[in-house]
Length: 267
Image (tube, rainbow, N blue to C red; front, side, top):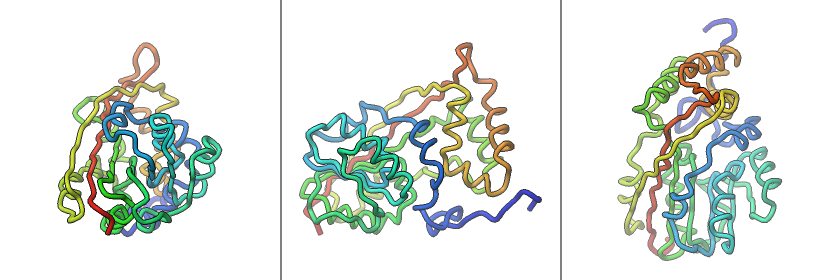
C-alpha cells in the first residue's frame, strides 16, 4: 500500500462497503446533477395507473420524480437511508412523501401499495429481507419493478471506461450487477409471474459532465481510498479522450433494464 493509500471500507454484501446508507455520503449533489435519468418508455411499460407507489432507495429522487411526472394522480413515497440524499430530494419536490428507511425494514403499512420500484440500488440490498418486505407492503396483484441503467459493454467507449475503472478502483468488476434477477424473483413463493424488457438509448455528455458522473459513483469513492482524486479523474479522462466528438461530447450506449414481478396477497 503506497503513501496515499488508505484501507478500503467493508460491506456485509459487498467487500467494499460497511454500510449501504453511507456509500454516497457527500456525493448527493453530483449524484442528482450528473446521473442519467431512466428511459421514459421503460416507465410507461412497467405499470398502468398505480394508486400508491413506493420508490425504495430513492436517492435524490431521480426515478421518484419521473414516476410522479408519469403518474401525477398517484400517492408516491420515496424511502432513502442517506440523509443528504433525502435533503436534496425534499427540496426538489416537497409534494412527494419522503421518508428515511432501509429496504430491509420499510416504514410502510401492510398491503398498502400497488407498485414498488427500485432504481439502480437492488444490488446493495439484503434481497431476502427486501423481497419479504415487498410481499408485506404490496396488495394483491401488486408489482415490484427493478430498473437499472446499464452501459452496453460491447462498445469501444464502454470497454475503455470499464477497463479504466477496473484498473483504478480496487474490487470493481464490470460484471458487478450481472445477476439473473428475473429467475431470482420467479423462484419466490409469493410471485405469480415475472416479465422483463430492455430499452436501448444513447447518453451523450461533455467531458466535464461525464467526470461529474464519475464523481457521483461508489466506484469513485472506493478508488479514493487508494488514490488521490486527481489521479482517478486523469485515468478516466485519458481512457475517454479518444471518444470525444467534434461537438465536445462523449456518446455512451445505454440500456434501461426493467424486471417486473407480480406479487400475490400480502404475507
